[in-house]
Length: 500
View 1: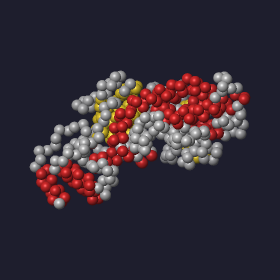
View 2: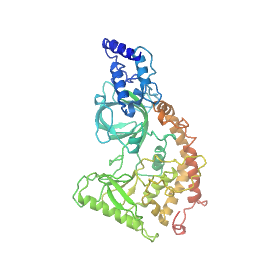
View 3: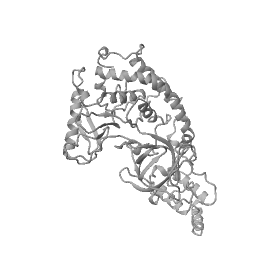
View 4: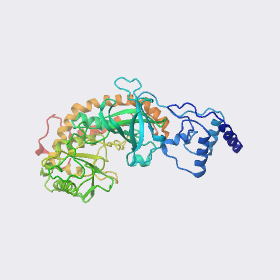
């Protein structure tokens, strides 16, 4: 009987009047992404199910027509019903509670690569929200290029992050003008989407030179709503971002290779990594972000610099300040403190950025913050948060340098100094910040859950009081028991013994 229906549909569609007017959101069952429900979708669907094709995750909703999280004959049957006139449940739509970014790739191609950009057009609808301005329109879109980004987030998760390169610099949603942006998906950050926003904000308030700004938005890709995203400044050398002298690739002038360096302590082996063995015998991988392509002179210089720093860190005499010739102690103290208060066990293992300005006497500055996705992962309500982040780390983490640096009394002194400022000035303001953040994204967050039910947790909510705030408050309370002083006076560094 179903085969007869297929024949009837094929015959009927052969005499149809063609595509309807193209909407911003595709109809349910538009598996070939041409903005109409037609016999072409049925052919694509049948071929895909028969061949067992694995569908790219962004179009799962297009193929999974009945929404049962499986793609099979039941979806074909429902598509036939739709072509014969049955009303299909529409594709999930954006809420309009946030600005909406529309992106159409060239020929509406799917984004399947982290290496190769696709040409695309875009426009931004501010949806009438005060303080934001729309950019472009469907009739006058802007040009860009887009590709995938991330490691595990790209490989393992259905909702993907992207990297954007605009044709020309553009100020976006109140953030300074630039061509380079990131769309962060936070598909696995079900505890309020707060994993990056909170440490970014704390770092700013603690005086870090720069942390990425980000704004929540909703995204429509090739006519399909793909959920709540965060438009985020990409880490790069720029006067409005990491403000250092930009060093050229393949530089051979010895006067210029001392900086600027933008480096990432990495937890992935890359072909162009700077590699050496840390003083504890573990492999140490550093990815140069600027410059990206190194001359032999550049590679020799920065490798030697890192090795000298490593040797000074693993010196037996922990009263020594030799390591401070290479690393700015105050930037590291603040960076470490922020990672501790959000309880990020992956800190100093990967996505750990540091930079160095040009000059023979300049030091490595730690920051900006990036990818704190493992914050508060020890979220069990009974967990006391009574360990430092470098203790009992997951097996896949390599906690570079900080475990050893924490043994230096002078470093402990600086951490306690900044802790006093955090606890008295910054911490009291964070609950209001988190509440405002949660309220701002809650409506769009619930639409995002409709779009990506596979990202749901046992508690389908974007409210923070269930997880993030209790975790944060527990960790801060424990750190205050370790680092606080009732007298309100900074301790004398000579009174601090090695090890926190």
